[in-house]
Image (cartoon, rainbow, N blue to C red; front, side):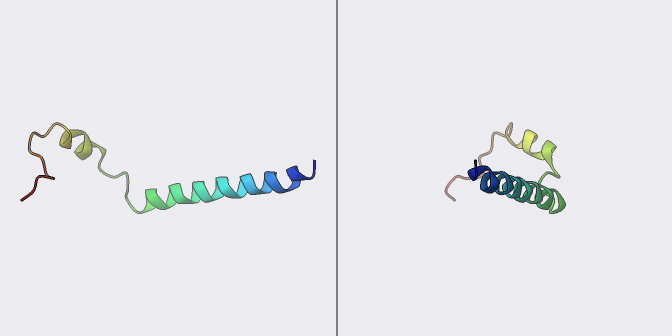
Amino acid sequence: MTILLFLAPASVLIALIGLGAFFWTVRNGQYDDPQGDAARILNDQLDDRPG
């Protein structure tokens, strides 16, 4: 039963870290261009070919 005294705060801390990371990615513009990614997959030209 004493393990719950450690696991409950630890899980809340991990959840808060994940939530903070999500807000950090939103603030830094990681999700700004979803239409560009959707159109890029339909492009026939491959960008990763050897030059």
